[in-house]
Image 1 (cartoon, rainbow, N blue to C red):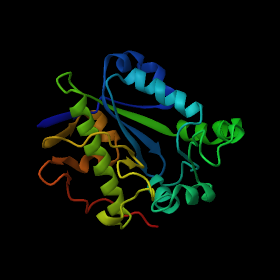
Image 2: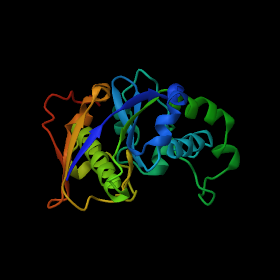
Image 3: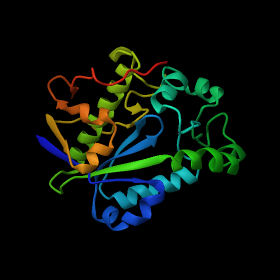
Amino acid sequence: MQVELNWKLVCKTSELDEHLKFFNENGGVYLWLYRGKPLRVAYVGEAANYLSRLYQHMANFMAGMYTVHDIRPEQDLVKHIAQHMAGKDPEEIKRGGKTFFAAGPRDADFLFSKQFSPERIRNCNRAYLDNLSFAFAPLDKKYDAHMRRGVETTLIVGIRKIYSAMCGRDDSCQLHVKGKNGNHTIWGAISRYPSEDINLVQQSEAFASLPAEVGKIRGWDKSSGQVRLALLDDLEPVSL
């Protein structure tokens, strides 16, 4: 199936209030973009309604319920992930102090004072959120939840493979958190693999505002169970 991704809007966190009508009237796939050097994809998601999903995201951010990176705007998010997260188990990552995981109430190291620390939320969560932009590609109502999730998975797997290749990692050593379920990735949770071939056609003026790597994702091949990518030769490798 051919799916047209018309990236209609890219905005910063501080600009969300300007687009409430758009968010309430649309759903589809979306990206978080970290405005480091260079601009990188930080997360891929899908939603039936953008407004409801953004509300959930903001509430979770400010409650300290999301994994966030202690990173400065002049840094490369992919390099940060490769150095401080990839191939490490959650305990190693916590000890490194460069990425903060949300702890559950039954985790061995859970403390209310730590999980809901005003300093952490103000200094790390807020700083990370303030350096995010969001990109939205609404999908026609003819695409049901299964198709939205299939497109979401195509983008998640594609971004992970591209960033792995840019860091010199092959498919057997992709950027992932050691010990995590294979469907739980750094760039989003895979809820459903595509049940048919997907050909992505990405366009619109806003598309030019996205990282170049997004345009390298061409679709999903059901027979091989793999994402289809364009050549990556023109993408600059990440120096680790």
